Length: 242
Image (cartoon, rainbow, N blue to C red; front, side, top):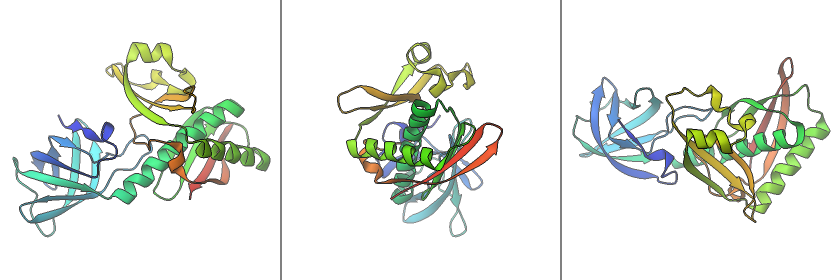
């Protein structure tokens, strides 16, 4: 089973690992810092290097373990037992970290101000959108949301992540934010992402297996660029960071 170093070493750009399995153009490593698609966050890209060869990592998926799809046009994949060095496309990863953190803040603000529960989200490296349970946001609503988000960015709230036992998570966390009941019973440990105010008061705490920045100050300026009705009592909010 691959050690998921992307969950604990979120700021690591290069790493060393050993090839454990090869399946056509896919390889399984004993550990990886490449994030697989999931939770609205796209997979990382980058390269693997070994013995003078370079393979482009074009896709990363998690099933029973983490699979790295390689561009093998110019070279066969590295053999089992090969020690490789992985290098992430850092600009892409860091953009995803910023947008994922911003999405958490947006979810918290929508719940705080409008009692609007997040129902879905999708992140990219240059924009993102979030779906929530709400009839319709006005232009004034969107301006207020944007102002609140940028106040949090300016205040530089620290962002942390850690693991909780599922029973403890059920007791401590807000079910409207975590929706732990949707997770399979087989998941007994929950990764928590927590945003705190400068005085230590927890502003938002939720379950998440994505990657995040260490401070809201890293987000820059948040701009709400649009809204769309997605169905009865559901709104989509679109935003960009600069």
